[in-house]
Image 1: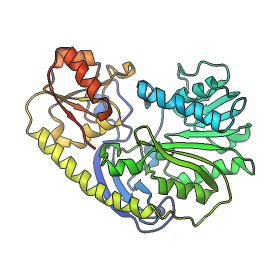
Image 2 (image 1 turned 90 degrees about the vertical axis):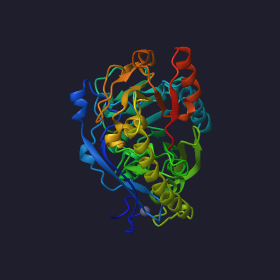
Image 3 (image 1 turned 180 degrees about the horizontal axis):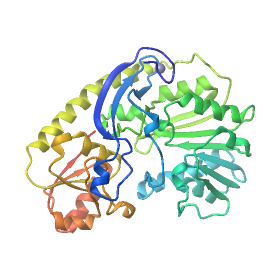
Length: 385
Ligand SMILES: [Zn+2]
């Protein structure tokens, strides 16, 4: 199997998850629909030459980002602060006041609205999941959301910067996407900003529940640098942010270096092999622990991590009663595969959980405090990895 980034034919097996939901952020109206949701296999491959990691069992035909896809992070104050600082910084660093900004995969327009707030002339985004949807984030006249997949011919309109956040990891053919953008820029000096989950962090932290079917590609700094340089972008900065969980690349057009390989890819390859061994052992440990447990267990966080975790447990998911989430848009819906209901924290009084599994250690303190204030006294465990 050839590497989708550098085309080398040296793929190595890293980690495997069977029967995970194809779209784990797509919640369903009832349990029957949730059980029937499409499932697939994640078969992680590593290219030792460029350090790219991808799902060799990914089938792009199964991925359809339709209305109902819910991937917004901006209900968290922590994320809001990150995004506000990012928007202000991009406008300031690249002189984007009064300029025209395009975002590929803009979700509900939260970042577009922040760009407009910081003084760009127009902010235009493309996202097929927003077709016919309300856009509560994008309230300004100069913010436009096109509810379609991005196509390179749409870049016919004038633009001074391109943003693309949390999209590249969903793209099975990243080279053509970057090439299209590079072609549309031509000989102009247009900055681009790409943000992806940081695979380097995921490997080092053994954050195995970030491995989801929707992510076909896992981008580390060496891999994304290789992509950008080969296509004809010179990175201005490649940095980790948001607790190192995001990888942020600012780049400008340059001459392509079609044979570029990053020396640090070797470190990523080593980390990937270690990750694979540790993740496999961790999954076995959780299966053993939950298989031998009596009582109710809930998972706090109905995002991709909680839902993938629940499904990867297989038969050991039996003690799970519900997923808890702060996002009111998710309440009353059902998670795919395991068919667990998503409930508000207040509904935990009716469940009286014996064990609460916290899917993001960043929120451990606020969750334990909230439950103690509700008079509940369960055990807590962080889903490590
Ligand atoms: Zn490669």
